[in-house]
Image (cartoon, rainbow, N blue to C red; front, side):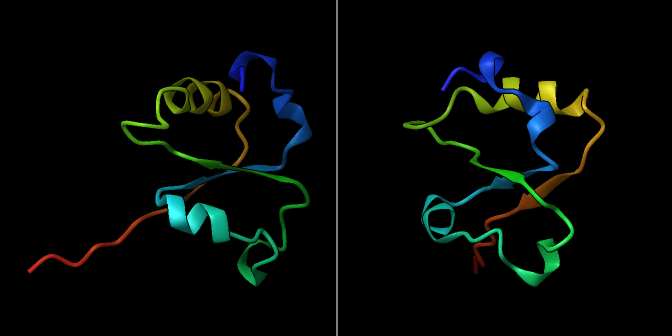
Length: 77
């Protein structure tokens, strides 16, 4: 997807999902997200799928709309 062609004004919030499995199962219908009418849900990317998120995040920052981080928490002993 070409980040520069996205019409960011169409989205109420950016939701960054860190884990690919979580991204595929993610639902913006969560009660905590009910205040966001049309969120843009994106996978941050990794070595295989990555590359465009930094550009999107920079463009999104300029919109002054919420950027929500759905992180990946891996407990390590």
